[in-house]
Image 1 (cartoon, rainbow, N blue to C red):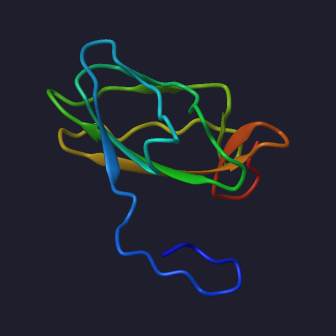
Image 2 (image 1 turned 90 degrees about the vertical axis):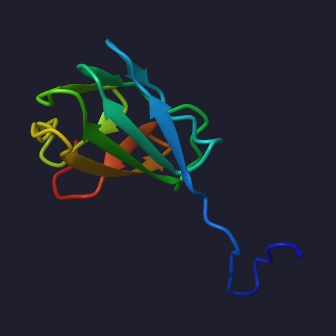
Length: 119
């Protein structure tokens, strides 16, 4: 009934996703105690704030979906680090989905996106 460190693990249920409702001028703050997958439909330009309650080695996935008329932008908290040190530009078509995966390193207190030259 308990997870063991000396055996392969099998889980009956996944972590699921947390749906974040973003209104006009919305801010998304992923709470890592709530799960590992976060999804938001953008109704305006959004801020993706630094996650709370992260654990070293934890991976989170963030889905940002263009709602309304599309062309919304996202600004990112200071602890997110991207490949090439360049913050990505979101897709702009209505319904477009951008997916970001980050791994947490508590030594440097950053959430790094997979890729080369992350900084």
